[in-house]
Amino acid sequence: MTSPAEPVPAEPGPAQPVPAEPGPAQPGPAQPAPATPLGSSRPARPTPPGSSRPVRACLSGEDLDWLGGRSLCVALDLPTTVSPATTPREVPWAHEVWSFLHPDDGPPAPVTVDTRAPIASGLSSSTALIMALFDVYAPDATRADRVRWAYEFEFAFCNGGGMDQLAIDLGGVTRFDGRPAGLPAVTGHTTFPSEWAVIVVDSRSPKSTPGHIRDVRAQQHRDDPELAAYIRRCDTATTVAWDAIIRRDLPALGAAMTEAHRAMRDHQRMSTPVLERLRALARGTAGLPLKVSGAGGGGALTGICRADDASSIAEAVARAYRADGSPAEVLVTGATPPRHS
Image 1 (cartoon, rainbow, N blue to C red):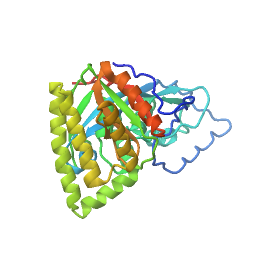
Image 2 (cartoon, helix red, strand yellow; image 1 turned 90 degrees about the vertical axis):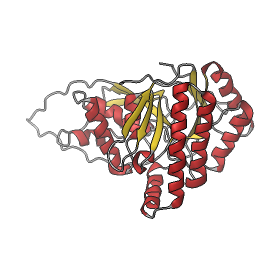
Image 3 (cartoon, rainbow, N blue to C red; image 1 turned 60 degrees about the horizontal axis):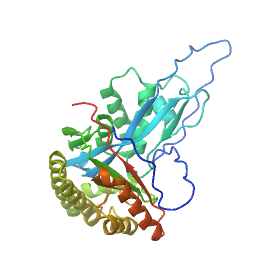
Image 4 (spheres, rainbow, N blue to C red; image 1 turned 30 degrees about the horizontal axis):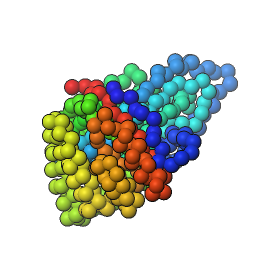
């Protein structure tokens, strides 16, 4: 596993701590569990095990996991870790996940959260947190059950697909064929080339996944021709990107990711002037093609380069962003290895 390097800040000053905020959508506050009556006792719970889950970048095919078509993801070595705690504390999603699993069993066992990934950036940091909580609160369940539960849990408030849960669980690079309901089919799974690195640009601009999915479902309902064109272009880009990874053809992968980004921008308005400026600076400064990941409208951009060049490219891009007055941050990371064949 390639260990993530320290972030290269795009603006001087002390590094800011990354809050453990799971994403844009939050259900209402969980109701407190009833107190245990005086004179009764509740068996002591065993200390839950810890769990660490990667995030994922979508290289092509956002939304195609539920619209139908092919999509491609890589699991990034920017882990979210849930660990046992000795005292209760507020952790996003902990009460909701615990109540999903144990609706009649009082408050959740206390945990802490640490994450290396940008939050609410289109890298599925919320899914990584939710899956780590399912690991901690249902350690005896099968991996397949925990993946399915995490999908069902998120579908209830986000109404999206299941490629995020599978990509995070499987690690490496995963290709999917979308389905209108349930988890997508896994049609390819391989190791990310060790001689490549992933550069993540956190634009520091907000985005909304639930709002995006509502808009796309409305397009689907009215048979929007722009959505149909987007699906066709990204489906083709996914095939080209997968073949490029298998052949270890970095220029072809960059071209396929660029095509996927243009489809997102041109048909679905998933890019913004801020993101396009960051892309132009990275391309002009270091020749690095970047693609928005996730719902767009903000969040993170990702690019692939040779691992030997990653540090110098990241530094050059960060300098360009500073000179342009951008608050964007640049990180270098790798992919996690495949967990299953």
